[in-house]
Length: 207
Image: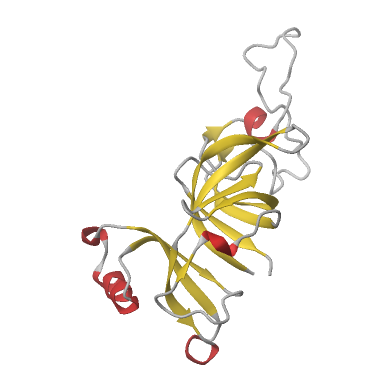
């Protein structure tokens, strides 16, 4: 599996040959610099470290600054390791959007939008109590009984309750590549990908 780091630009739509309107996401995919090649002999595993999106030198610590200097690269904001698919990779080379072909399928990983503390109706899709009679008062979105009584005298782990929602790593699999723009380093994939606009995403392809 090889891949590239990108930035979510936003959503749009394209028309296919049958005239059907297809929702799609535009991603700025690369170019990414190869910063390090990890080997089995030195590091204990094989991987390639890619860096994406230039970053100001004054915002980089000395250790990372030395790492970028050794690779002959400008400081990068996002670093990701890919464990397969870069057999002949060399430090200093670039990985571009031409890695992908129109029509193939990819997996996109990103951080979902944070929703803050939410109740069970929004977080888990509960219906709520839904009755205004029988003494109900301000309970239309309440969770209701959670099932614990004198036996087992506790709430089971994993009970769906209110809590913090979003802000987690999410992977959407098997998104079709609709368009590859090599001049502007743009990748258009079918459907939605996790994250807000301008958030970093990782696009992986199966070799």
